[in-house]
Image (cartoon, rainbow, N blue to C red):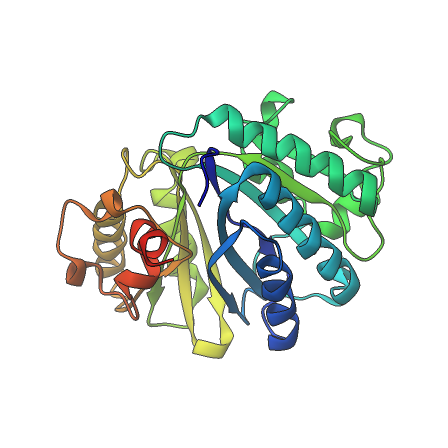
Length: 303
């Protein structure tokens, strides 16, 4: 791509039901020279679109600025519904160092993007992960799980909710943005073949780290009405501590103990090749998995 340090950025937007809006966001991402749009996908139940971009810091920040401008024009959170927590039209924008790029480059990208979004679009921005300036905000959930409505009502009154960049009020239609720097995170979901949400929530509670479960695992139980099932939605924030195979086996074991069959699993976004070591691909029961599209190294090599 260039001799500059390379980063990945995985912006999540609060739109997964209007294909035209998702395509407009993809077009904005692809319009910036030096940025490679590796993949994008959307989900109507989550009402969320996830994009994977790669490039040097400067072009990536320009691409995210273009995408955020498109989102501000086309997404109104006052009319947004979905099962996934969110605070913004551009909800989160994490930067991830690739190859030998240092984390400091990802932190700089996060700070630059937050400054640009607040200055140009009037968006309040919260820094999280390695870019966090407030220790509690290292965990994305502490920033994002309030949701747009509660943040809108409380941001001006509570000093702890003051953004790192931008005004102490949410944008009336686009909300706020969480901008971060982190290592690879794997978004991995296991679908349970039931419409009863209780097993998914119980399993999520047992496997997530904060409740004494698996290290480096965050999990929620979510309904998927359009698929007539429920989902254990996981973020594996350090696949070296808890990987795909261990997480899947634990969910499978707990579901079996409850008498709930699995429908299969799915990936959101991309993952490094190393995350697939430790088992056979078929053991994960992916509903759809194309290595050329999902493995980051394969996609980067393919151009």
